[in-house]
Length: 594
Image (cartoon, rainbow, N blue to C red):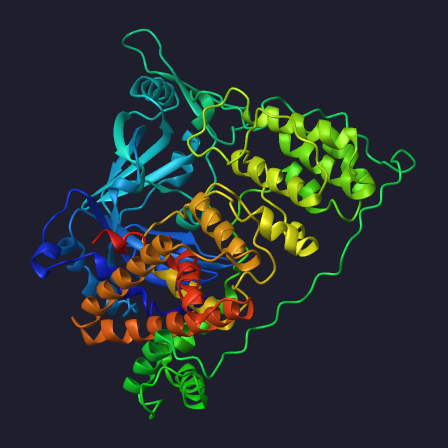
């Protein structure tokens, strides 16, 4: 197991406190835990030295990396009292972090055991109850089964568990933020014991027990939950799709262009910019830059950045961590069959056209229309498919942010840009698939115009580099991920940011003055909080130094990317801040609450 010290992890506490006095008090809006560190291929047995202090649990980062935490506490003061023991056990960079309860929701669950932290837990027994959650609050460690929509449903489950031998069960209302899902890490790989059902007998005799021979269900959570239709197209998907289309598919020709490689932008040395000044300030304070604070990213600034990467221990550690983190993982929406068909449409357009006929989503009609348009231009079938898709998407629906066109009209598609524009509108409403990258690589001009007015709900794939193949942005992402207090990553939010970043990468548009002002306020607020926290402690200052280096170096590079696209520096600056917000915004959301 490799241990990556938290380095900048203490920066999480920037927005945790406003005064030292406030930190010591119990705050009913938060719970507190101890962040132990980031580890490679971690196992529960690696932490035997601190398991008597509190409940050890972990959440995955990427690949084999895991963030490990200890306990749950009602106040920062209580958690801090345990830090000396944790530090002496070999984790000197452990720190207290908070989690906001308003990020969760109140649910009903069934408590099957109440223990003291540090005591042995019979996971084999508990796993008989299906999906298990653990919640530690100071000296109480609750073992809980399932999450249920109402207390009535939870009580039914509690009655079942009593018959299975769980004597001390009770229904509890808990906040989901407090619940830690039991995984193989926390259980040490334990499996459920054979189920024993308790059968009530006549009064005065001992209850009988009967071995249960049936297989355990994957989860008991579904026993009482309402069924949810997972098909977003409105109807079930047919299964009678042929295994092979060889000899069946008509010849369809869709012209395909070779995708151009996006190189790392070269930094302009003759552009004076505030991002370079901020970077120079940090480098100068660290003794790796000796020139003036002129705002020009020249040879001295470049050398200073290269030197601090070699000399700063924290930056070196996070660079190593960033190389092990796969940016492409867990940042997009789950791939559906429709998404797979659309992604591969250009390689086998004839097969894709047949496969799309089996899909019920309006997007399937749109992509069929695209295939036919590319093969033979405007035809009646293209018009019919597109108008049917519009009708299916919009008819009878009340939309808060309706696209800027008359979806009650009937359209004729004489050019590709119009077709792509309506594809954009339908994608913004239908969440059945993300816009594939090839739309932009194959039709850069038409797509840029067509997607200029895409809404916030539009989902686009992480296309190629997407800024995140660069060393400085990967470093920034690694730091932000480690600072993220939201245990259990919000995949939908990350997907939204990834989509927004992809659009900025592929089809950027000049920001309005209002948009530029908003992102500037976000940027200034973040760094105001960082500077305040940095001044409180020398250790804090070290961590903020590394964060500044990665942030402002990334800003410089991204600004040049947009200037290469034809934007002026004044236009590129807020666009770069917007990209930075998509990289760290979700991870720093709690910081911005103050």
